[in-house]
Each structure stands twice: as C-alpha cells, then as structure tokens.
Image 1 (cartoon, rainbow, N blue to C red):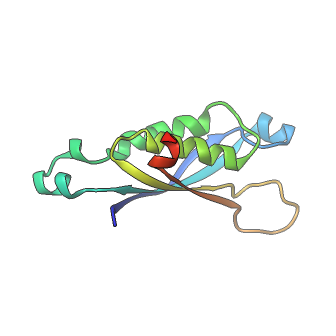
Image 2: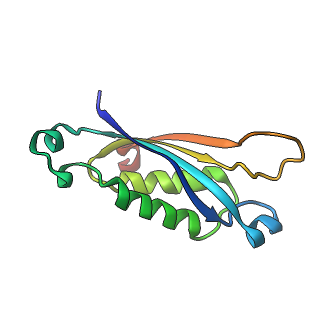
Image 3: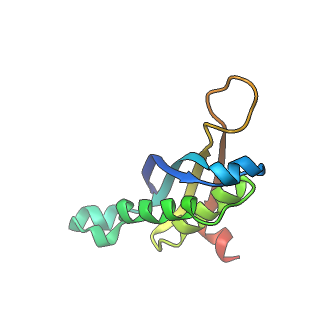
Length: 124
C-alpha cells in the first residue's frame, strides 16, 4: 500500500458552472487531493526531489481552477487529477472538489464531487 500525501482545503476562485451568472461572477472552490506516493526514498535520503513538492503542485492546481471555465465540477475534478498524475511519483489520486456556493435554492453546507484516478488508467 503506497504512502499518502494529502493537500486539503486549497482555495481558488473559478468561473465554472452551467449558469451564466456562475461564468460571469465566479465563486470560490475548495480542493482536496490525496496522492498515493512511495515516500521511502525521500524519507531515507531526506530529499525533496524524491517526493512530491506539494507547494508547487498547489500552484498548478490553483492555475487549473482559475483557468478555462467548464460546465461540470466532474470535468474540473478530472482536470485536477490529470495535473496530479503528471507528477511521475504519483500512482493514484483522489480529488474532491467542493462547491460550497453552488446555486441551490435550499440551505446546504457543501456540494462535492470526488473522483479516483490511477496512473495505469491514464496511460491506457
């Protein structure tokens, strides 16, 4: 079982959604990623280059959220997963996209979409 590196609560403003006002006004999204990574070499050598630099990964994830709008949170989650799997040491990623200000006319706490992607699925 690989080790896990988690980045939770990453916030960025995006313009995703199916409604005109979502594309025009934007809203905040919250991103959680859990990466499956073998961290033994990094731990043994105390070497950042042998693991995932989560600060740099956070920059790339925010860039996706702030980037080209999509209609569905599912599409956004898939794009974020692809960014994570571009890291050569990541074997698997779980991505959760929170849309806490989704246009729902009832009281609610959060809307989330969670996906799981594996490296071998990306290559096939």
